[in-house]
Length: 353
Image (cartoon, rainbow, N blue to C red; front, side):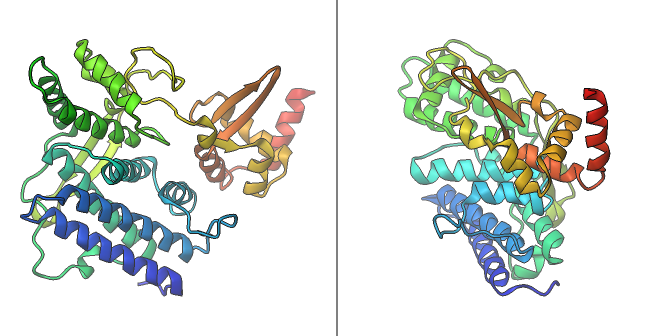
């Protein structure tokens, strides 16, 4: 086990405590408040674990302007840069955070199968992060009396989503008077789109838009386009079950809508593009520790300006200002490990000449 810095040791311990509380709540016979407890403790466990890893890498986790610790969203972004978080791992963490957010501040409903898939995927990821960052294993922190979270393999995630969608359709049938429950289940599926999209914020308008689409007979892939490519890879049995979330396709196209757009499209829209695309060209170069010329050459080489997940151009009158996302930052940082930026700059000058 790695020697830990003092704050990293405390944060790691807190993460394990919260994870054990989440597992305890999941296996509880008491259904009252069970899902709330699972999600609250699970999200806190991962936030503390990410902060422990970042502190161990000597990455600042205190906001210099506010003097307070950063939140989960920033932890995930920094984790992608410094803790080797893959996009699918970041997606699972975003989904857990989005589900926790709606459960904590309002309420959600979703099937036991979907809850199990996310918790079991979280168990796998938590163990892998402990091993990757601290040369530690989750099994060493669980008492011998703990039972497996489940003795059965989870069904395919797409079958679970289809079943949930069918349940929502039934709840919205005329005369059922179950609209509140249907909306809570819609809210959960919208939160799950965080697997595929950054900065998911589910609003009442999002829920209403999807509800109208379902009542109009819209298919599940059109109502929740970002869930179409979501898959789970399940291996092992009993105590050694592992669940990994991944994406096999981008899913159906998603329109980006204004908050007041009356269109009947159903997918989650971008609520605040300036939160997602917040790196200017100069700030991007400064953060990467390179000159603006090298930064421009690297952006051109990676074709970032043509990637919607990396770049967005804000238009103010006649002026156009490209800004970049954390995804662009991660791609550039990874590329810098094996590319000669001086060569890219020279190549760009020859093409310009």
